[in-house]
Image (cartoon, rainbow, N blue to C red; front, side, top):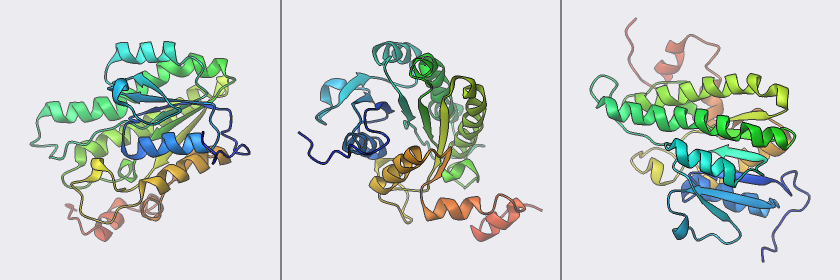
Length: 246
């Protein structure tokens, strides 16, 4: 029995589904949702039989498979909070990477959100609106050598999030964009720069949901990047020590 449940949390009694819940940020989100008193947490994973967190309902979910998404929406029709966390990165170049790698990033990071939201929107409407959280990135806003396919997919996912926020307003569904820099998980294993603790990113995300935010900037790096959006883009690239033709 979990004795650390916060029954005063606005998330107490919620029914959540987290995609990419087997490790990294997703696993922290599942744990912290339970600590905040969620009544039920569905963990979207590719191998439910191997899922080991107690008090969780593992559910088969490859977010690139439309049939699995539809089955998950049917099985988890009581969801009030959908967190689209699953994502991939295929380092490379827009000019030289296999098109299949770039398409995989776009399909997973953008297309899966499109499919998930469309599948779960009716359940959220039935739950008097509910909340959708899309885990994006500080790289929604800037390109960087070696990760431009990822950047393009997250920029597209940001635009998709903005669009869904308007289209779902009529049914009372709040749509939250979460942007973060690098945090220390398997996903960022190839990055040797500073990394945040994923538990802190999960905490910032859920704090934002509790506060009623529609955008969460989960760390100082992300807030710094966004501060440049009102300026000429060359200002940010100069600070990042990246060359662009002018």
